[in-house]
Image (cartoon, rainbow, N blue to C red; front, side, top):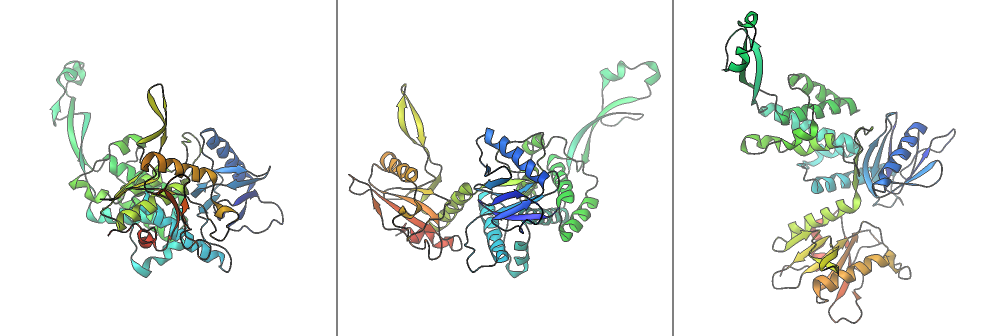
Length: 431
């Protein structure tokens, strides 16, 4: 089955005879794959996760989730962020740029041990997201095997004709006379069978089945032969809870997040017991929030920057506080008023004055509540949107809240290609 690459808010339809070629904005997939997407759309909707929206009997519209979806028939759909305009740019350039962006944002948001090493790694942007994850996992696993896997003592109970370890006296005394020459014993075996290795081995089996990249497949088969003595995990969740950390397992820290990605199969809601394939979906709103907060912490180390800070409530009900106010980013500054910031993954237009630049009433009302309850209208609140060349490349003129003297709302762009400059653009001066 062919793979499809689309962007946020793209349409997905059933392929029919003489249908147009699939593009970044509209993919035409097999009917079985479309039916499966409809089923999971209904399942997600029950849990409040809006991944697809019906746009007709044979058409779906994607929402703000990015990643990969695999269907039982083998169809794989890669969903990329919608950040760049198609005008004057080829589809392949858009795909490479947005894959690069998504990989950087995932690395920051999920704390993935991923490094750029110059032009030698530029080819990875040509890989779909799932192949990039597989590549990183295999590289970490290969390094781990070269450095040496960790062994552990496991308690074994067995019957032998010789004594080893500890004899189970009660069990031995209850044996019939005909079995007196057989000793029920209990002893420890020093072996590679431990939770971390079982999980990695299980992830490797998934990789061997799912990868379509020749280099990944070759390396996966080599590692499979080298670690054939490691059993697969029989209870993934339990083994994940038993994954240990410490000085002796420092080498395992690098591969752990990649293993969790492959085995955890990030989805908006649990679909345990149903087909999931290698499906990984992430909300762009959250990825953008974590990405902005990460670079703020790097650019403003002397500030205390918190995410999802929730200390205030709008109402009191029956002598208890209710309806939390939870700004995305809360910046505490020494000898200065704090700043409240919300990130919005939405493309706005600085020249659309009569359309209010694309700002939503609910967002402005939310920022007013933050200003009132967190800042007493004595400092500024900020809305952060993605930077767009010639569309939103400088902060909008400040919005002043009525009946206040110092409270203002600032709407600022965040340049995803130059995130280190953001703290200067939003006037969070460290001086």
